[in-house]
Image (cartoon, rainbow, N blue to C red; front, top):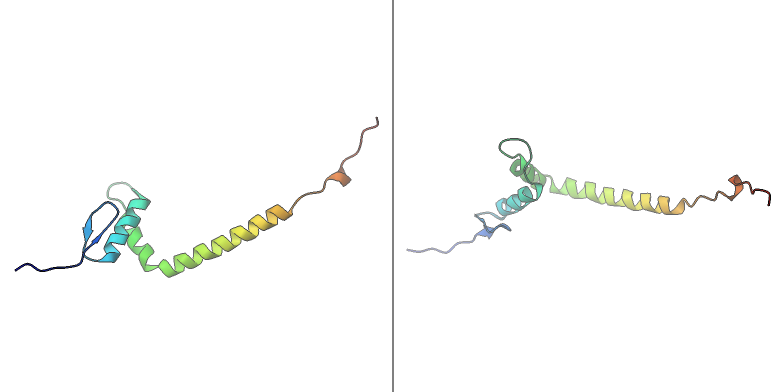
Length: 89
């Protein structure tokens, strides 16, 4: 007798029984080939899912630092008029 079930597909259309596996496959695809021989990307993708909360926190901190850095860089308009000597006409 036939039974129904739930499945998940990654962006390439590969079938997975669990959503975590489909997401890990997509992450591995984004990472591409890592290392020589068999790629390390699938293992790294699984680790990224496990440490997602910490990774998201790091990216939030990074974004805040980048915004602060951009603001500091924009504020550093250097006035060099005091360092310039006019030549006699």
